Length: 316
Image (tube, rainbow, N blue to C red; front, side, top):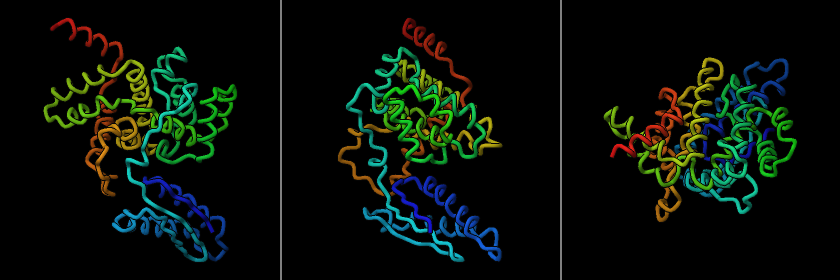
């Protein structure tokens, strides 16, 4: 029997972990007479059941754990699942210790490190490009939580063994650590202040007006945020170049990172009752579209953006 504990509202992440368990079960436990694709069939039943539960209002809105067992040919998958509203699952909690990197303002980290891009971002990107850029589902498949927490602790304490840990760690854990860093920033990388403007800009129908607005918004970001964003942007483009192998398109990557890099502030959500359908809200789709816009855009130069800022400021 395989036990899978699910506390994530991301259904794709849930399904990926269960798929791994089901296929493994089918391969390891199948006797000689059992069909070799038993695990795959069981996985199909698990996914179908999860999708039905996702659409069930009572299951989605319940705050309690939902227990279930799915069985086929002697193989059982037992799992516990509950849904958490988006505002709770993505809630940012600033770190009380300003000596670390997780939960600490990006401007504080870069100033302390005397760098333009946080060390954790640079190292995770380098490792992914070194040995994970062709990994199927990179950034989509979840890493092992204990490995991610170990890397988080190492970066927070600035241990000398970080590089050794990175070289030995499963690549999905490294990708998960990078996502966790951005998720735990005190405010999204694209900032709370500019969020409404990004939402308005991406909705513009005139291509020239949209271009001007979206570039102006990038110029409005603090330098550490902008340089880090451009670094991540170029990295994700390189990952997408390997789509035939890793199955990660620009849209897939935008779906993974968009709601993490761009999100309304908690203050703007106060007093708002979040429904289960809010998980798939219009805001989330717009956040994905913002990142996708920049991913599909020709290379963006920090120097060129700043040169345009100077031009606009003197041509008034």
